[in-house]
Image 1 (spheres, rainbow, N blue to C red):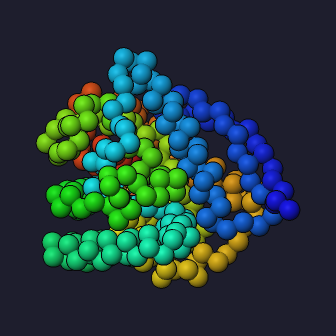
Image 2: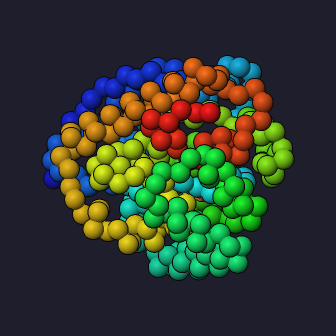
Length: 288
Ligand code: SF4
């Protein structure tokens, strides 16, 4: 018998407009990974508002299947998503798992050769939240390597339905060829009104008392395997949803505070970090 669920109507104001959504959670106990699709869906529905604004402004979305330029930047993964990714990988056919493992080994070798591996490992296990300023040089050094994501096959995401929230917000309205070099070209990335990965990280930090953490994707599987004990706990569905919405509220408050200082859609080329808003600000921290 399928688990009993409760359904709620949710209305929140985001920087891209009012979001009205239905959310559904099981009435019983659930794992942290069960809330991941709920938050990702909220992020995607909020992104739809921004897409509509962009089209209304006379622009179009350039991103299409087969273009994977953004699958070479450092993707941040929240801890709940890292646990979910491990489950996804384990559910894949063995040959696919083996390909991912080979790519992971190759990626780690290249990161090691570039002197970046200890930095990324340090980020994954850091006990301190990292500021955008700290991360900018790491983002740039990573992007300079143009390492294809371990899940990328023939320029297509091989886990598309399960890709991290950060990947879902990667949309641009500038010509796609500009994405071949996002450092020097004025790529126009769409604003991300709800960074679902950040909301999940805020939730995780609240639940565990750990610092706000986002994991570089090549470190995410290892981190999740190493911290499986943290995954075992179950929460009442309603409690977890309520705490998730608290995290969403914190995120939105922080975003509105930022936007009181600068407009939602930058009219000039944003920095590499801002382009995809890859890493979070601490909830109490203000955008510079
Ligand atoms: S998970 Fe998929 S969408 Fe995200 S960077 Fe990797 S290949 Fe690209």
